[in-house]
Amino acid sequence: MSKQDPTRYSLANAFDLPGFVETKEVQRVSDLCQALRQTPSLGILAGMPGVGKTWTVQYVAQNEPEPEDFRCSPVIYTSYDVKTEVRGLLINLLNCLGPDYRAPIGDMTRLTCCWIHRRMTELIIIDNADWLDKSAWHLLSDIQERTRCAFLFVGQPDLPRKLEGRHYQQIRNRLALGMEMRPLTYDELFRFVKLWQYWRIRNRDSIVKRSFHLTGLEKEAEAVKEMYRVTMGNLRRAMQFIEQAERVAQVNGHVLVQIETIHAVAALMASGRF
Image 1 (cartoon, one colour):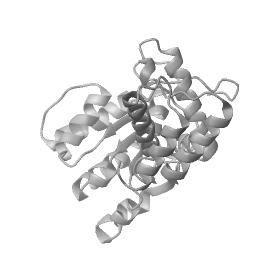
Image 2: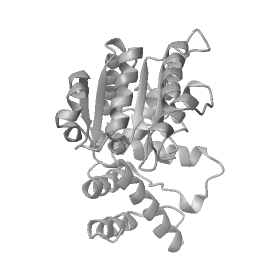
Image 3: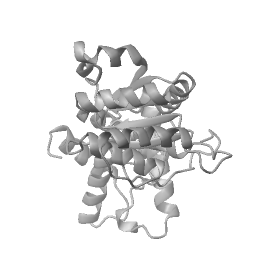
């Protein structure tokens, strides 16, 4: 997104947000993905819950330039959860690559490697990597060794510590890059609020009574300062703040969110009521 046009947005994202704000952290994640693709290896993206890791990696994957060969899928995104087993992980990968296939794990592993080559996949992003068990880690490491396809594992700040121990020594040796994603800065949060207001005005289907819209630059700055003080730039907390402010404004019959509502919601969130 160019600096000249701060209102461009992508509708597809993890938070179901109306727009996407490219920040310094987004650029760092994009650079990390490019570096992994150039030197096929394993990488880690860590960060506190709610800072926008999933939102960012999905954006990076979706905004990959269209390859000349329509059969190519340079970047693939999938997620892992507590209920997913190794076989389920392979099924997810194959579904992303193309075929819907069920077979013994060995056959599915070979087919996954085959389709990675066929799709010319350079990077596979595994979200919620905190839930990966030892078998899943070693399976993905084996696939990486066979295909030379890079993997980026996305998780909580303690994700690197989970790879300590002799069982993960081979995997640690293949970890080449990593970074921790930081929350939004005040200026980035301000841009996000401006984008949110722009989208609300532009979207004719939005309900005016629930519009998070403030009049006057001074009041906007005051509102964002309150939001930043309470949320510390955490995107998920900022979304909760906006939703609560809209709800309170609607209950009080206000067409727009008043600055008094902002202060009230900030006090409630600071006290742990929300």
